[in-house]
Amino acid sequence: MPKAWNLLVSSLLNLPGVGPKMAERMALHLLRHDPDSDDLLQRLEEARRKLRRCSQCGDFVESDAPVPTCPLCRDTDREDSLLCVVEEIGDLQAMERSRAFRGRYHVLGGVLSALDGVGPEELRIHELLQRIRSGKITEVILATNPTAEGETTAAYLADLLKPLGVQTTRLAYGLSSGSAIQYADEFTLARALEGRRPLS
Amino acid sequence: MPKAWNLLVSSLLNLPGVGPKMAERMALHLLRHDPDSDDLLQRLEEARRKLRRCSQCGDFVESDAPVPTCPLCRDTDREDSLLCVVEEIGDLQAMERSRAFRGRYHVLGGVLSALDGVGPEELRIHELLQRIRSGKITEVILATNPTAEGETTAAYLADLLKPLGVQTTRLAYGLSSGSAIQYADEFTLARALEGRRPLS
Image (tube, rainbow over all chains, first blue to last red; front, side, top):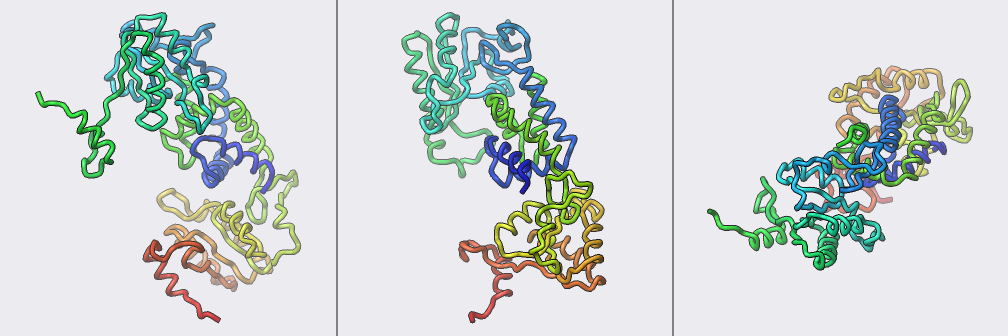
């Protein structure tokens, strides 16, 4: 195949979750649909130019300020004593969609993973400690994912936060809403039983 | 979320096989890894500028010629009497990797699909008929995929080619190399039985 094709495919292969077949399909699509290519080129360039990380939570924000702060961190109606620590901005978005949380967020930017070479230095842990030390935070919800890495990271952070005198909590485990007990895995069922609550 | 983020995600959503979660993961990756973003921007722009379709087979080719022809179509060592019709350039590449075919190719650019609004006009069928009429082709292998659309397209083409006096053939159906009979679907097994061959 021509070099320009191979280069395009290999650069699509760098994207997460994209395998060789999919990279070829995507390349073909981009070469056959000029408007889609135009959009992608322009919007990627624009997003890279405009988006910065909020100095507080780490979420993306469009701002020219020397120290950018996102609307959520500036919102004076939110609870300052409650901090929710998430892995990625997608988690933050999901929490917001639930409308069940009115505190502040902190995006770690990943999880500890020996396999992927992600240590504490690669995450926004230093910033987290600073926020807790300087602030009004009384409870830190460690809302990392219920995966091996997520658990490890939460345990690591809990240890780190212990001397700071804040309460650390973890989201409840249990059955997903709309799921079937019949198909729940053993681990989820065991946790759901463990966390059972009295009907009032 | 900031507008620039939403626009980037929506333009990644246009890519085939990319859902909302994956588009967000990809956007995040592109914003966090500048070298990968640089590569993608540059290579997509370059591929769009350099790559044209071969006037014969329809494969991509890097060429400034008024009528671009790819190396494979120019190769004088290949059989001119045998034409293999494939859906997409990925199929052509797979055939080449097999090293089992030494004829010429013709890329349709898709399959007939009422659902996706793809009719004969959207495919390179006119060019196919022209090649057959003007040439030395005696056999046309209709190597569309063994899917409903692929079969329909092959049947449609076979009808169309009948008056032109060329032999039309179809790739053999059967068990994949390395697969297990135990897990083969009924249709594949039925076709494998139907096409069974004597041991010499």
